[in-house]
Length: 157
Image (cartoon, rainbow, N blue to C red; front, side):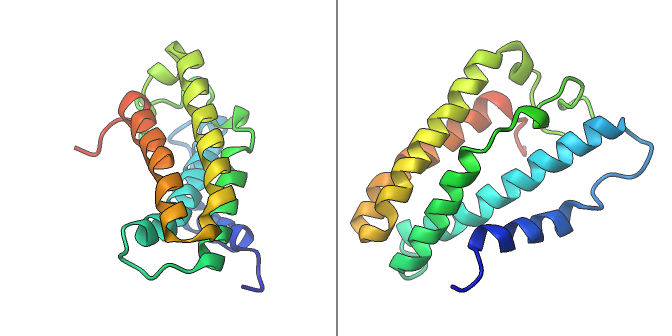
């Protein structure tokens, strides 16, 4: 891959979410914070799709693609998200699925973000070392994502 996987997926996410908020229906700072975090989550999803597809053997394992996606995921998980989670950008605002618990249990939410950073960094170290290594390191990442979504994101249902 000649282009940085992260750079290209970031550009895609920005394009896809750039028009997500109609002018004037929410505060501009809230809209920007929501757009940034939703773009970030889109990039998580993009990389997790590659890794999960390989781990579930739905797509062929490719050491280079796995290593790149895992490195990008780890980079994303270790980026500061301080500006994404501003008061007033919870699920009471149209377009947000963030539960109020993100703010009322800030320490718990921060711990979940740190768990993802730790698990994704371990995945990045193992993903290119074969399918079995990918599978073993992918489980904790998926578990961390799921537990954070259950506690801090409004369900799709």
